[in-house]
Length: 534
Image (cartoon, rainbow, N blue to C red; front, top):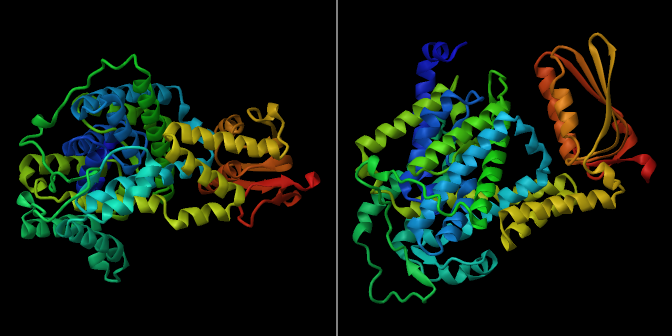
């Protein structure tokens, strides 16, 4: 069905879903922007562009495109490092980095680099996201109590966190406490009608009511409040935005384009934004009731175009966002027009009701972000890694520590190097780290056998992934792993997902030879080695 055809057929469902997503996206976009060191409207602007523009050119069906918490750390570091104390200058330099990152994403998408996401081990990617979650919590918990700590290294900031919380402002802390209670308790309600009301919307409404009761626009802690020198008040407790959308537009400054810090920011935005978009789009495909599959390369270059436009006008970078996309599907979305409507509702709201945004407490937004950060770095995330094997938990933790002690790019690189060292320690030859040995045999007109020998690990299976992606639907595909002496978790997960997807598309897919391997953990997708190596 054509785009206009789907609009004509499904506009009611898509408009309703888009409105629900708009209610969820409004506070999250504001919160992500503020936490990133950008003006609040930068998040709204990015979501508007993601909805109105990217939804018309992307390669997915029911994903929602906009700013996300996973990019907060990257953008905040860029603003601080490029601005060197000048927040406004850092903001404009970072806009230039977003434009450059968008251009890189367009190039990557055109040259079909979507498959390169497979090069990053699963545990390293989730370790990166968990570290981002921890950093978000450390940065936003002080905002929840009305104080700000001085920027600095992450580990000292974590150690100093209890010290900062001792000087909380009661009114601000109460708003944050009620906000967190809503976020935790609302999804546990058993009344289906009430559960349809988005918890983030309730958080904002409750915060606005309490903000009026406490008169946050004129709040002063009092003469008895004595904060240490390394702590400062908010300094404001409410979101502040310009009177019009046009006044929110800022243009990038490319004068830092020849500096190392600029290109470090570009690479970080490209890496994290591309990985999150590809992973989210693939995950949303699993939730799509119509079982459609995204064109990930097209999705990548479409997001890149969105980032070029957003960065040129003062907006945050965007990704295909998993939480809002899940809500979009649950609300009955049928096509990308729901993303378009969500962007349209955001535009209409900030044009007609800008004064409402000025009433939202920063503590409410901080609570939303802390809740999001906790979900990224929850105990369940650690337990999930342990289920896959002790080495997966080790990689997960190593990546977290690497990111917290260095920076995001270095932390991911540390995780990848640790993964390679584990494989070398398990006997993978150096020449086999980047090359895989396999052959494709056609046993019958409708049967293809993929025989894998040697090691099949995250760093060498891209060629195999590309080969099997080109196999026609409706046949029988057999993965014969009898001669593979080592298969890591990333490859096991890929083969298992490929099998499920191929069967859903009407074919038959089987995995042979695993009986001759010993898994490193009880999980069905744990890494495993050939029994002959024992």
